[in-house]
Length: 528
Image 1 (cartoon, rainbow, N blue to C red):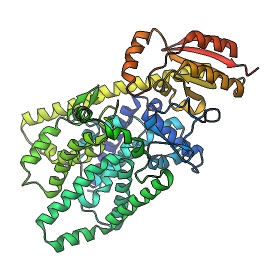
Image 2 (cartoon, one colour; image 1 turned 120 degrees about the vertical axis):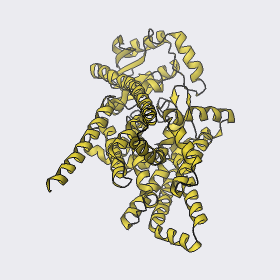
Image 3 (cartoon, one colour; image 1 turned 90 degrees about the vertical axis):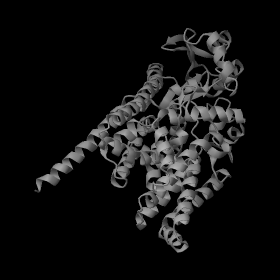
Image 4 (cartoon, rainbow, N blue to C red; image 1 turned 90 degrees about the horizontal axis):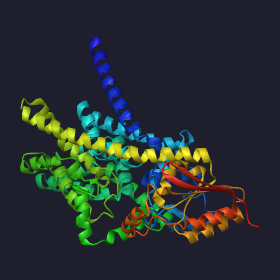
């Protein structure tokens, strides 16, 4: 009889191993060590900056700052950084970077993305231990939701997933020990301040939770319920206040840098908001929305709304909060997530979606109705296939970074000048190994060469543009007509002028065609 528990433990261990192996393999397919592109890159550099500054300043690491204090060649666009008390700081909240930066003492910079595995499996363990999810549902919650694509890049999203599950344990699972209430309060306060877009969901959820409690129970019972959660509420409140104070001290605004940087994005027209509603919830501009990525959410919402009187108060609160958040977010968000695969503004909704889905899936799996089973399999397969498509797209971006790394390794430049900020992101985590700049005009090229001639003698410089066969002038004009709305077009350098200036001011001047790029290379002679 002693053998049976050991066999069961072995089976559970094997299931965890298979899940871990599958998750790691699925992430590794996209070459995550090369995934630092756009937001992921910017968060990586913010994290590196804290490490580089020995945690004494949040000043963003900019390798060209010594000769470019006015940021004329800085790659970040206006809504991704702020000037604050003579510092340049990231628009992303400092809390995530501060939590991750100590890992750089033991991990190479390019491997920081693998930290997402810790948060993913913390979330899986919470679902298994406290929410009683069977293993097949853990597979579904990862591979058949947009949690999968959100884990391919370096970001706070996997932490939001895990900490949200922890943050609601005292209410959803009635866990009221001092330790759990304390950890839950800290987790929830962290999530809210790191992602302000989670606030609508949590606001709706707490409102409806206490509304139904007030509606169904006596006043003393309501007070007793609140009192039993006093540690959770006090810790959460103090955590939020502490972060408010930190934001006010560092950035002169209690909501922090992300809110300040996004202010202009909150002022868009109602027509634009309707377009964002479409892209965030359905499909637009090659972006998959919440309802399109998770089509089972349609029957899920329908079921809970039609069985509203018979389901528990907690599920009433979760279903109402889910629906209202879906409706509200597009009208208060600063944008629609740009080119991310899967609606990151709805990361927090993975939690109610899974909890509401669990009893229905368990019931369908246990039933003998083959039609329900087949429909469930088809819907889950559809969401899984969307993940496969996203993985292909992600791999194309990581391949861009990986291939450009071979160029920098071969040429070994000290200074790299790109035609636009998106082009610069192909530098990936090697941003810290070179002085990487963006020059938008021929005049800026001339000024830059003059400055570098005075201050960077004998340094190797390369100017990088897309190869003309890859990006023709006609294509460039079409792209820039669209990019002009954001004010950051792909540069059109006067190549004759650039080549003439480099021939004059550099030695060993060469024009090279490498992969997708045309490169002008030389060693700075120095001022006469």
